[in-house]
Length: 263
Ligand code: HPA
Image (cartoon, rainbow, N blue to C red; front, side, top):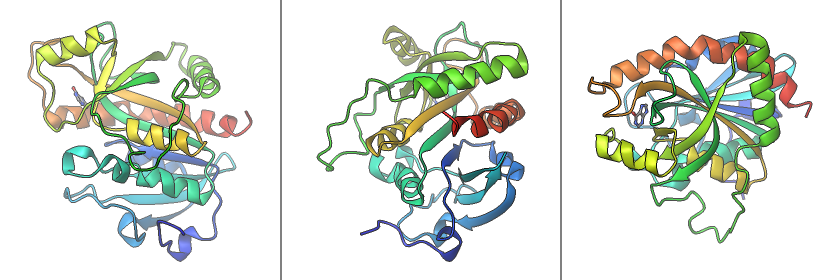
């Protein structure tokens, strides 16, 4: 039995790619051809954020001839949702027939060699929340290659061709939040091997792999982690940095998504 009750607009589509947009990236939906939309609140079973302005919307349309579903708005552990609830949109993607998932987020820099305003491909993750979307499922799933090597190779190649620069790649640490880290925690994360830190994406990646979908994920490096810069962190700056870097991501996805379904 389905976990979701789908409104009519979702019953006549068969997207092969699903995209989850981080905050400040909503403009991506404007690039879809023939876009239709639907509020999360119209899909029974899908959690809706209680944070004002984050309630969530799905966009359905095509990009370069590929049928896409785009999710704008996430729910997070720090709002009180479970890891399983934070990954519900991925189970919805699966039900709609999605085979490849593109996840985007905003993240703080842990590896001081990385630069604010740039994008980082996630090569692997550290789950430091001790929460899993698979709790209670009885599934023991392999995590050797959560982030598809072939999709990462594709995105790196497309990025090099479009911008002439190499896309950074690194390890993303998932933390509970909602407070940002202390300088000691940023140092600990670096010692553990993390390059960036954030409060999302990992439960979605774990869920997508458990359902046999391919995953690729990108972090917008919005700020240096605490202690790596002389300034305190400010949520508004994080949102603004995400918006400023959005155009580069849109250009990359516009050329990479049609190529993704070929491989
Ligand atoms: N820490 C955790 N999450 C974040 C950060 C950060 O510095 N920046 C954006 N998301």
